[in-house]
Every structure is written in C-alpha cells, then in structure tokens.
Length: 251
Ligand code: PGA
Image 1: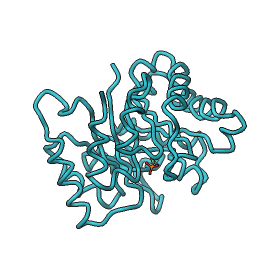
Image 2: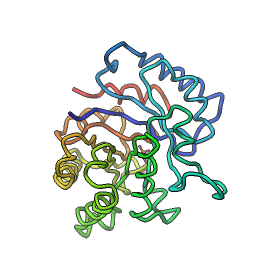
Image 3: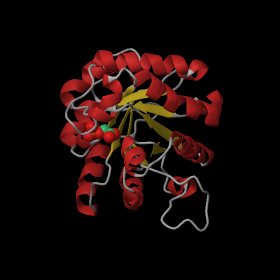
Image 4: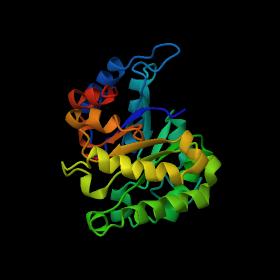
C-alpha cells in the first residue's frame, strides 16, 4: 500500500514571525482526525533546522508532519556544524530530505554519501526522502535513466531492498526545480515507472514523489499519473494559498 504525500521543502526560507502564520494555517487546514489522515493524503513540511522546534510546537496535534532538509552521517561528536538524525528526531520530526540536487551540486554530495545519510536517518527512526534527478544536458543526451538509475542503484546497494522499502523517493529533474518549467505528466510517469521497476519488491510500498515547479495549476494532472504518489514542493510550499490546493489535488 503506497501512501500519498505532499511535502513542502522550505529550503533556506522563513523567519519566526512569518513561519508562525504559515504553520498555523497548515495546522488549521489539516486538523488531526482520529483514525484517518484528513484529506487521505499525508502532508508534511521540511523546515530549516532552527525552526524545527517551532514546527513541532505549531503542528503537534494537527495531521501535518514535519522534518528537516539534511542530516549528518555521524551520530555525535566532533563534527562542527553537523546535525545528527537523533537530534532531528528529538524534535518529533518524521522526515529528512537527503540528496537534494542543490546539496549534490553546491556541496558535492555523492550518491554514496546520500545513501549513508538515508541510512543514518532510518537508524534514528526518521523517514528519508531521497531525491534523484538528471540535469538538462543529461536529459537532452538521453541519459535520464542511466543517471537516476545509477543514483538509485547506490541506495539499493547501501540500504538493501528491505530498508529502501521504508524510504520515500522524490524524482526531481534538476532543470525543473525553481525554473517554472515542470516536466510533463508523461515524462514524469515514464521515469517513475522506471524507478518503480528498479525498486523491485520495495516498489509496492515506496511513495514516489515528483518535485520541480509543482503548482496548484499542474498538480492534479501530475498526481493523476499511476506511479506518482504525490509531490515535493519548493516555492509553492511557502504560501498556504498555493500549498493547500496542491495538497488537495488528488482525484
Ligand atoms: P520547486 O522546488 O517546487 O520550487 O521547483 C522543488 C524542490 O526543489 O524540492
């Protein structure tokens, strides 16, 4: 059984005052209803580390979950500036994004490091949201499946199918992130079907999210694709008027 999810990725945005309004609106839009996720969809927001406590305080008691955007591979000790999975879990978080293309590009994160981060998250009881995706040049040279297949293979080798079954995977073509150019539903479905097949037995339970310029106006057609289980939403997760309709865009 695959869970339908919409996860906001705030990236390096926010401030205490504005967050309070956004988180409060999220909590009221998706209240906790005993025995079921309110809209049949799991909604979450991944906030910058300093705001984890604020997310916990304002979302506890609602149906909305929260998480972080990166995690250390280390558990504790002399790693200045790093944040461990246990620390994130300490704030009641459910998720951590790993391997976002912005981290792969700006922080030279390899697929092996991303897989190790996913393993660290799992061992602290967090669900990693593992991001994969090709650049425009790779798509234009027909390398999409080679690239995303390679990124996924490293996760399969490091985590094994059993642990991978507990992860969420987000396909985020680099050329569609923050550009306003989303992949077409057919392009997304084709990569998701490829990834699902590669996941083997884990494919039956893993949520495959699409990310890259998802908006209220295109979410429904993307989420209607058979192998798309929801979205990882950047810019449009920063305003409730944009985020809420995306969370409700499942047919
Ligand atoms: P975007 O970002 O929705 O602003 O394109 C998505 C992401 O980077 O996760």
